[in-house]
Length: 464
Image 1 (cartoon, helix red, strand yellow):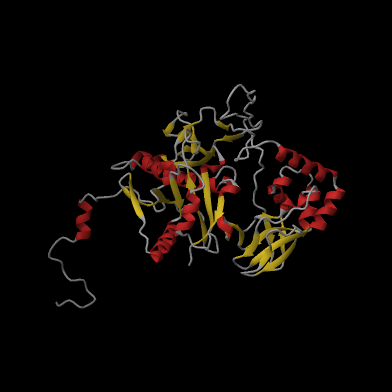
Image 2 (tube, rainbow, N blue to C red):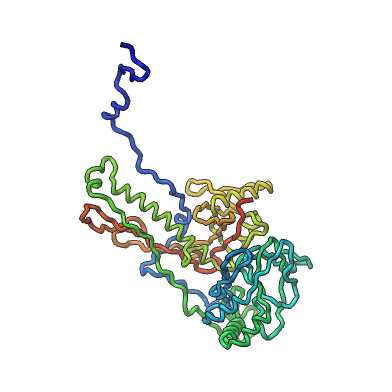
């Protein structure tokens, strides 16, 4: 009887589906998306912190660091300064009066500016304090041979004119402030600041302490000076000196990432051939923990490199995209830079700028990988560096190692049930559902030994 189109034709040999019942399947180990090169973890020198705490002792610094003021934005016309963040200004560092900070923040008013606007001219008296809420401003000053040019570019969160606190003289602008983009600046008139100054004993004492600290002899890095004598003849009286230390040096405690891995005993007992199920579960869990560890080393607000880089070591691009000039500026801010770290899209934007100038980006051989380099310094890709909603990112430049007063990673080796350096796996038991539990923990942190060990190129435009 002939077959119809709906009927399956009679086979003359064994089908592949049936044959597979007698065959051994060739398999891979479980694969996982999201595993990156983790260059930061690989290239950071790691210090064994046997005590769990790492103290960074430094010479006494008389220069008070500048931070970034924060804002609450509720619309284009409703921009307010977060009062606590005014403590990022050097003169208000550690100021205890929250109520006065709130009153001071309330005295700032938003002012719009457009590209090309001049907010203040060099040599004019400082009559207002500016804090940039959004936008970029060029500081234009005198260069050699009477020429003038851009000395620095500042952006969101930077304060200008806070020398207004000087009650002994008439402070003047050291640079011309010219907007390179449109934006918003928060403005505090000098009269408003003077009113608060006259009415607050705490504010007057705060500023007096700041000025007394600034009058102490300091070297070019803002550290308490060491008196020396050189080039003398005869028998002059030599200066006596000592090296003063910070009384409260920063201490880094190891942070951690943890999870509980669960495996049913039936799976662990019966399904371990040809691959050990527990080992494969653990391998993938450790990969995820190491990925999160690298993210924390960059983005954690307590110890992450992006948040703990000194404000004076942060610069902005001159025009927006990352140009060779910008990387040169970043490179020149420290000695012995060992590596750049950037998001892959930022590296691509840098390549575009080099291509437009007819420049060829060199490459170096690192661990059998061809890594792009600028001025001989490798540029490692790192997808953990964030990209903002406006398609801007950052480029980090690091000097590394304890002997080099650079950036170091912190962990503790030799911990109980250690699986890999700084990471252990501890058996927690079997519950009433016959499920095995393992506590997987990684301990880590990072430390910046001196401020110029790391620099950040900020507000890098990667869209254009």
